[in-house]
Image (cartoon, rainbow, N blue to C red; front, side, top):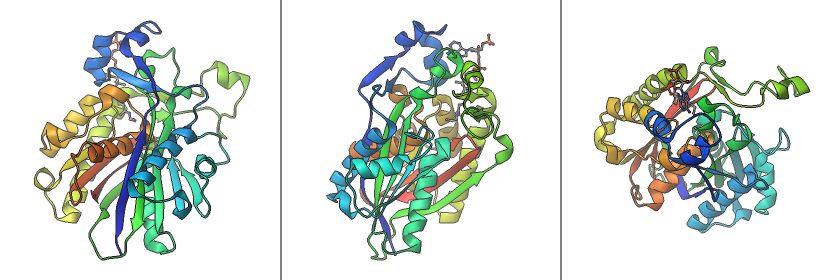
Length: 329
Ligand code: UT7
């Protein structure tokens, strides 16, 4: 059994929010943001443009790239921490917007590691059951709705967007799609990066709104330190399991785009060149579950990743959840 990446797509909303714009909103400056994070601008979805719109747009492009009709898709997994609603799922709204027929649709919550978690889940679904010939794996976020725009330590970091991969079970024995992975969780760190309000712990109330509990709360430095070690160790585990050498065999590494300094530290410890790393954080900021999916699509569309090449995906985020995946395009 072989599961191939039949097509990729991404969607970035039109409106750009620059560092100069943020200087007018909070006590920050372009130099601090660029040197501490690598971000120059991020894109913000229109008010009436919701997560499922962006997810559907990315899926449409992945389907077009593969020449596959939406009616043929057997399942859609949308990784997101900014769903349209708590329920119904964002994936069900994608089903409606793409006028799908038979697709089994659900959302997956693993924050910034959502796309890798969805790729792991989607692939496993296809391995377990041959009736899923085509599966769409999506990362989509409207993080602008959960940012506290008065908190300079977080509001400069995040952006909106979506990315998608269409998986196809080609069943030809070829060595393609997800080849090896190392996925992890450590719930003991769940307090360092969270959205405290709106769930069963702090149900929505006037008090939770006043206390800004419906926005991202992050302990940045702690998260930073854990991110580098965790991503490097997951990449090394995949390298050993797959019997490859990252610096020689991998065409591109697609890391989660949280901070340019995290990406550079991971690249240095993996012994890879700048050319091997997909980096678009300067343009999009941190798009959480969407970031690796957008980066992967860019690698394909810019020709950096060609058919048959190996890519290494790596991500890290709230949970904590982290992982790495070896993928053949
Ligand atoms: O995607 C999920 C995973 N997320 C991450 O991996 C994020 C990891 N963390 C980070 O990327 C970084 O920790 C941040 C970018 C969030 C923060 O960078 P930092 O170098 O760790 O800064 P800091 O929090 O230690 O703050 C340093 C200083 C503080 O001032 P004092 O106390 O030294 O006077 C902050 O108040 O920078 C100040 N500061 C800012 N100054 C201007 C914090 N935010 C800003 C800002 N503009 N936007």
